[in-house]
Length: 268
Image 1 (tube, rainbow, N blue to C red):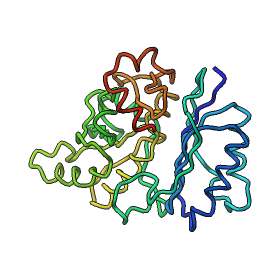
Image 2: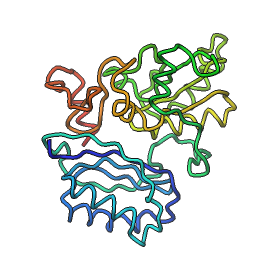
Image 3: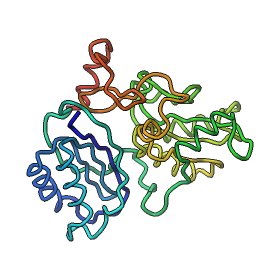
């Protein structure tokens, strides 16, 4: 396995994303990287694959290049390995948001929601409550087709087809008399951390108490904890389709899952 796959994001103000687009893409092409980078006024989100030397060189470029002004010097990167290149091309896209929520008052660069480390979450799940004795609710912020591939045991989800539906779905749940989130410690989670971070901030805005985001998302949980309390695989948006808790592409998964074509369309 000589291909390094990385996922990383950072909420940080970018005054003119369009002015950096060609500069970043040229460097990726020089290093023979493939994948997708999203740039928006609120930050950067990227999924890249290439040789170890090329990945390290690109991360060094983001961290040290003067034009970026140190904005990307503290990226948290999730890694996995594969024996083939899972992306077909190199894309750098401009977006209004690096993850679309359609809620402009959420500005993660102004401050993060409280987070819980994977090992701490595993401890809470092992003992059945957090360190203050409150019951844990794991809130899956991903889309319905992703959840169908795998999720945490007893996780709550809103059966949404896109993350932009999350705010409305949350408000509907909170308004219910039998609200499953009430008086619980809520841990929002997603694939790499970006959606659960925005979701936790939105819950903070609504004054929902006891809210945490899973630091680094499912991929970091797999990396540090493995598959404890998890059922199935984790869908990823490249041609590996899904990873198991050892961060290996699931063997023959694409040929056995009816939804593969839908996922590959989203990749394209």
